[in-house]
Image 1 (cartoon, rainbow, N blue to C red):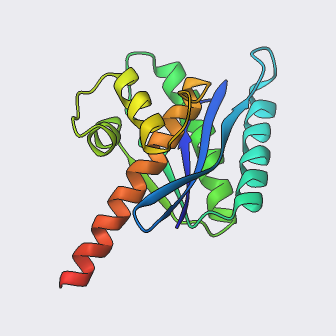
Image 2: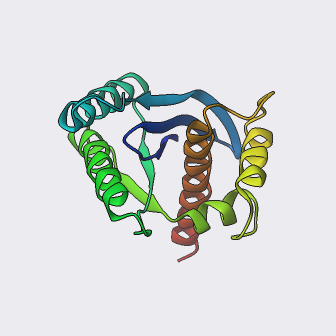
Length: 165
């Protein structure tokens, strides 16, 4: 199974693609889609869509795992992130890639085993699980890889549940 993990944003979108086979992970690629601050917002959204679409076509993931948004105190930021997230979801949908959403708590629980884990703990466990020398940079890419790991674990457990029925 190949999974594209996404940490949504509009300045930096973290991306990470992993293969999960026989309980082993292999990193295919990771990085970020970045947009410049003074670029018109619609151009930023277009760039996010285009680059996500290109990544999907290149890696051909079986699933996309993306962070489920929750509103924080800054509504302007939340709305802008939601718009960027929409472009990312659309890119997956246009390429017939199933989309799965996970909360930060679910990702922490899946990667570290503790839902209140610190960000650095999640990043370090992601590094260890993927057998990487260093924690991936930018942080958004590490978060995207953790999102992909979360889906691999969740999909494995769902398959296991189906098999027991």
